[in-house]
Length: 306
Image (cartoon, rainbow, N blue to C red; front, side, top):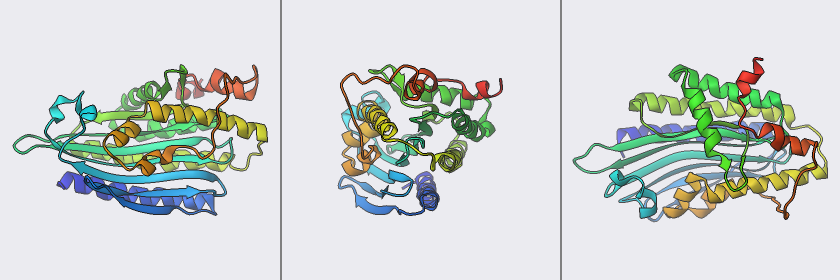
């Protein structure tokens, strides 16, 4: 490993520890179970899963570090400069699916990719972000989520949050449904426009911001009463989550195409989900308001100041 990879790996392992500790403390009953694994083609990771807790029905916080002599053709076809290079890919990725439909699902990841070839300069970049998927939207929660994202980006330039917020809205869009997956947040990839130290500092800031963004929302909504009908609606909306991850998500597709560990890659899928033919929410209902108002790529911070 290079000095760069060593530093990133140390940070990511610590980040995984800190996020798991914070979520266990908040849940209060369940604990993460760790499954350490090795990849026959090179590398391995630590998959940590929490299930059937007081708050969290299912959640996973994964660390992985995979490497190899070359990328599969499907992964390098659009990046010809990677052909013939050895690669390393490191990251922490998490998804939380709470029991209570008033507590949103959350997703975050930070990752580093480097491809090297003797006698040539390394090709590297960072990627990541975090996004929120509510079932029953609350404006206060959406504003808080985006405020933390904006504050995390602020030291790196006034244009960073608007760019990565817009990228998140574009990326987490379910094309075949023509609707956003959630209320967005931040998304970025191929980040190497800054030098390595600045890019790495940005990744650390984003990774560290997740708990600050998510836990206050969990604390406000975890004791909200809910009905069986609201739970059913949550399961319908979780179906959209599954559709996006299996059809569009880059991390899921790269992991499966590069021979990654299937159980770890698919830990992001919710435990209970439902589809029904041509299901639609009743007009004017809180369920309809999710798509009519909240899932509209809104500028939450601008609206909060009006």
